[in-house]
Length: 221
Image (cartoon, rainbow, N blue to C red; front, side):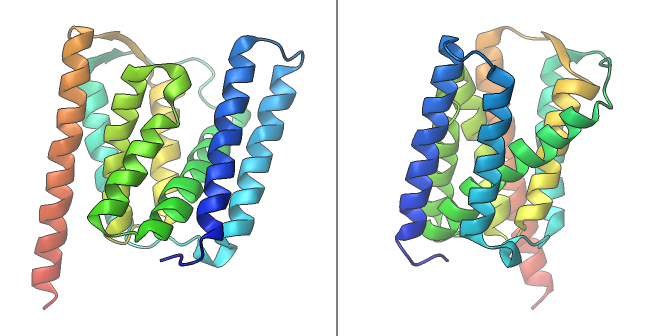
């Protein structure tokens, strides 16, 4: 648990800076958007590693992170129609998905914020998940809902000991699979049904994580 309040102040600064930058990019007032995007991602990563410290970037209980990936992909593939993407091995996309999106978000939300709040406490898991969802507010409230549900899975896994590196790996793999390798083309259900069904699948996954953790704890006694 991160006791010092400076970690929370750093997170607030990161959160507001990131949301402001996304809004500015969406307004189209920046000439070279790619330069701004890459500059922002490099700043977020270096800043987060400096605050969290490299020794905190551990693999931890990777099985919990793997369970999260399975649940999210079951929901994605069950509710969407997919086709194999083109140019799936673009190295810049791989770096962006795994390092500058997944690792950055895991450092700031599951690392700095959740650890500051108590990591495995119910309060920390809920707050970190909701704020992770609100981080995606510029993309619309439906995205806030789905990312909050996914964030709840990641936060539970973190609470049970999954390390930042294992969470970042499955997070990046999820991004790459869903956006490049096997992207969704059409929903199999109505959009309103998706907004109910996908969070419900995530909640079932949370229950599964809880039962899996309880079973492991009972076996280790």
